[in-house]
Image 1 (tube, helix red, strand yellow):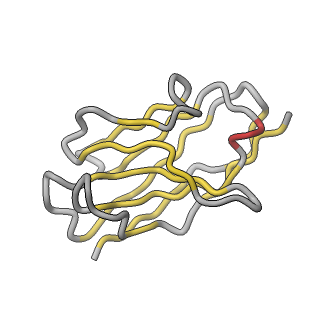
Image 2 (cartoon, rainbow, N blue to C red; image 1 turned 120 degrees about the horizontal axis):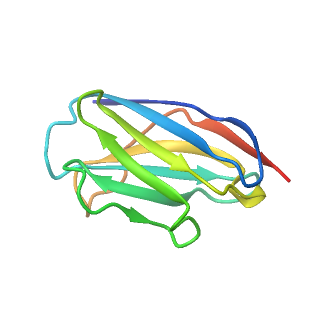
Image 3 (cartoon, rainbow, N blue to C red; image 1 turned 45 degrees about the vertical axis):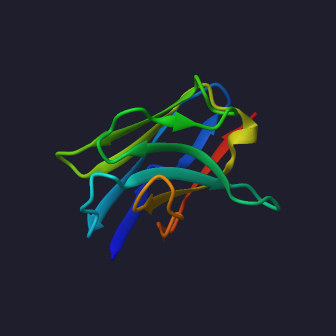
Length: 120
């Protein structure tokens, strides 16, 4: 089992920044596993935002956030953070942390989500 707990959501003005954090615990073990961030806006499907291998090399991003968001992994704290800059109203959503055992596996574990609201 893998447990994921997000924090850091809130209300921010357009153009501002926010940092989300995901505390990871449990059987995360394998170096082939990946961590990710997803989001779901009201009335829309959940969409991928960013991902990073457990080794913290070569992160990958959705085109909509590339150049504005940065995903990082802190091995000492066992957290995965999402730094969000130049936020837009379109970034308003519930953000979820996720885990998968490998790049080709399904995202099998999810956090409870944290709300991010960007006011224009």
